[in-house]
Image (cartoon, rainbow, N blue to C red; front, side, top):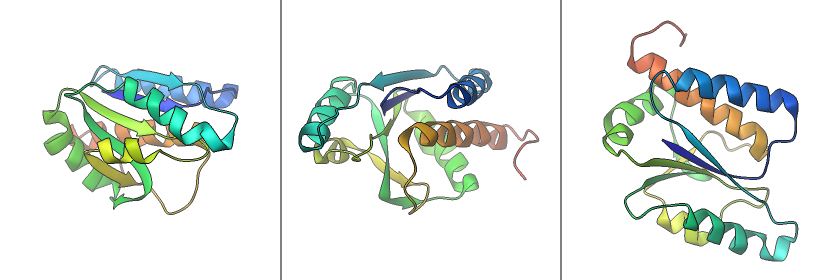
Amino acid sequence: MKIICVGKIKEKFLRNAIDEYSKRISKYTKLDIVEINDEATKSVALKKEGEKILSKIKDNDYVVTLEIEGNDLNSLEFAQKIDNNFNSNKNLTFVIGGSYGLDESVKSRSNYKISFSRLTFPHQLFRVILLEQIYRAYKINNHENYHK
């Protein structure tokens, strides 16, 4: 499993949470987090970030983008997707955009679009949210106590 994200994590508390969930997930699957530098200039950010993201995606990757316009899933449905659909693709790749979102080129490469909420989250915090939900999905799928 790969997570491609725009931006570096600067806050220690977020880095600690990311490290903790990454460690927990490693019990179930190999996890690779790929950070893409964000662009400072809004007028070129989406295009340049999109090019960088696409350069990290392989032809046989199953790409899941995180988009406000994506499919709404609850945690159980997300766990089913991980178990039934996503796990059958050995190259599962999640993509988290930067402050300005995702370029259309990345959206069109997506195999599946998920929305965790119609709210807007900082992309650094969203990385923690995604990792927690991936961990929760593995706990659900393995019938382990965590999800309430």
